[in-house]
Length: 293
Figure 1 (tube, rainbow, N blue to C red):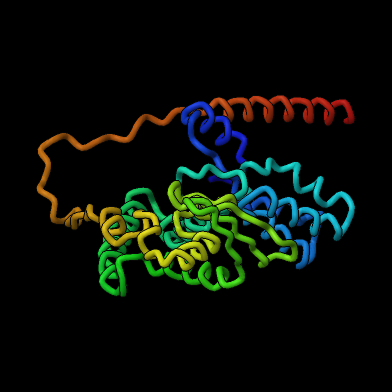
Figure 2 (cartoon, one colour; figure 1 turned 180 degrees about the horizontal axis):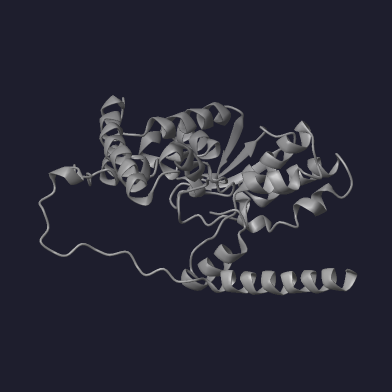
């Protein structure tokens, strides 16, 4: 995920041609809102970006277009397949639409970033070493085997499932009417394939409101349908490798190798050109002064 940098777009397409390259919706909003300001327009943009299916996206685009003519055309100049959930790949179980995690990390190491390279790397290493230990301890506070953040999403979806009505085909298929929007949308849920036409379940790996409504209808254990990526065992695997402590330079053994000398200083071509231009300019000024005298 990036901010549409031209060089990065080309590099990712060449080095990782099979990868999905998303654009940060927050940066797109910052660029787009220069011409389209206002809280209502901003809220409609986020509804469009968070729409998990094309039908929901079109509904929000129609609402956005009612605010002013040409506003949708201006927004769709940014490739919607890169910043809208409705077009994201479902294999990743990752539906984030902004780059906040990288921005947060950059702010976290802000003080270290302004220091020399060795000091910067050393401070980042110590901060990461301490953070990994704290995050492992955080897993001990979980009240169940599922991540607290995943459970929060699950509980929100459960509250939304109360507004759904279900029709069962007698096997694995269900028609679920969702009245959470101003327009009624009917989604199809397949419990055997664990899919829903709203795509939210496949995108995030956490049961959507429509799937939860079906699980309540069939008296199924809802926790079993949350992806393994949110389990404690997977979480601990991510932080299973520790950063080992390192003594400072004063504690290092004395090396018998000759010290490393700095590279020889070379005059840059830019400096040479600048001096030549300044010399020519001085000559012209001197000639013009002599002619005036």
